[in-house]
Amino acid sequence: MSPLLRRDKTPNPADRTVTLVGKPGCHLCDDARAVIVRVTAETGAAFEEKDITQDEELYRKYWEQIPVTLIDGRQHDFWRVDERRLRTALGA
Image 1 (spheres, one colour):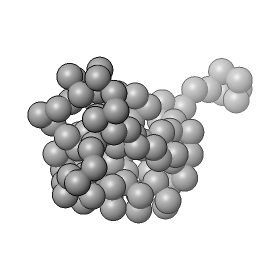
Image 2 (spheres, one colour):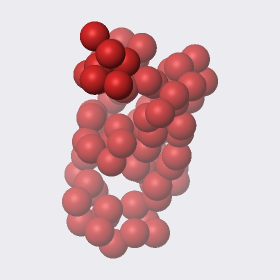
Image 3 (cartoon, rainbow, N blue to C red):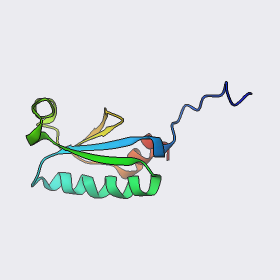
Image 4 (cartoon, rainbow, N blue to C red):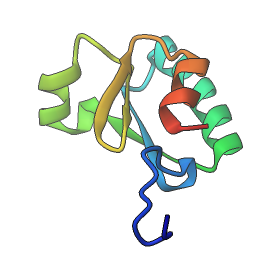
């Protein structure tokens, strides 16, 4: 099949962005951050954090679920991050 017609269903992990939605002083957020930093460093995925205390929309949406992990803007996990599940979701 021509490379122009072929479409991989699994994106390259380096093209993905993992977002941690949390707040300062949250021990579960610290635990989640450690897992996400390790996985993104190994896979090449981008990592960013968002603070719900600085964003009303995130606060309303995720207050009872933090930490929340998003992949490319879509919710992946909340409360705890399973390293294997995150790697799989990133296609690694």
